[in-house]
Image (cartoon, rainbow, N blue to C red; front, side, top):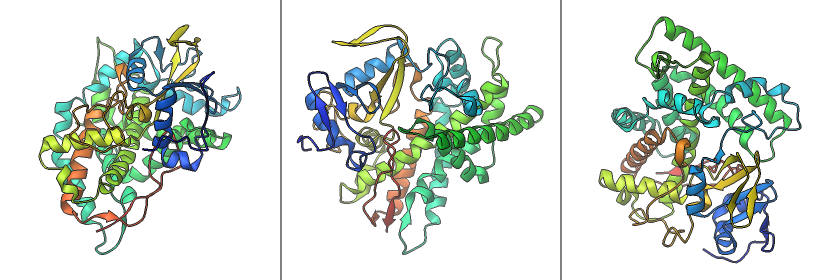
Length: 416
């Protein structure tokens, strides 16, 4: 990986200020070129385009994800403070969902919500889904048109996780496309440079999503099943149950988080593996080898590149860098996963590496609750795809979307 400074990046070593437009095509198509340069300059910098301090060293990111002086809950009371102007009247439905989302809350409320929801996502529960994930992967592959290039994102990467999470929750699988649409509109709230139209669209999606789920919650109260919604309705912790608002927010979080990152990671992983050349099956021999390959895919080209935290007090977060209460800190997961201090030859794809680790699922109390499910889906779906189609190849060079936060492909056209 070249360390010559790209023209789109300007760094002032005296102030550690960085100017780098996240919408610059050369950057979002390959952020790792910039990361390599920044690792050689400073792992901590004030990213002017975002307006806050960012950290990209593996040890720093891992440490700050666990630092309880930082958190997801905005001290001002609004989980997402990055509105256009001060008026948030047009975001009431979106804010209502966020206000009860465990992703945006801190203890003790976060602890209670996570304890109740986590019962469905422990590894032993998730492992029972392995046969269903394999059957679904095969069903989707059976639908590929023989002799024709297939865009694997809508044909394979997206329907698999949305079907699994919909089945787990007990909502109609045929609602999958609508659930995806609502999710995409809501997730757009976290992109750099969002507009008033983005906010209005996200708010409407939050309202529609919420109304849809409230109907299913009402049904499950009358007729409980063995699905996740029924489990969440009945679950108690120290005699306390989830309120209906907490139930709806938790279900939306699980649906959104249960597919968004997995779709991107599936596409990124297929691209990463095919770019290695040779028979892709060599990476998916035993279950242990398959698991190691998925871990390297998560490290090598992660689906989420920035996660933010709020400071809860004055903190000298690194030598010479002080943040004040309410200020945002950016943690660069993709950059941390390529830190040359933490990884030997970090820009090489090596499933068998001895220093295998990553921060792609976060760390600390907000570590991704769906990580066991995501890992299983990736292991099973990728192994099945490459075993069924060992001659698979890229039909065209895939391009990444202009969404730096969520690092995923526009399309992934493959031939067989």
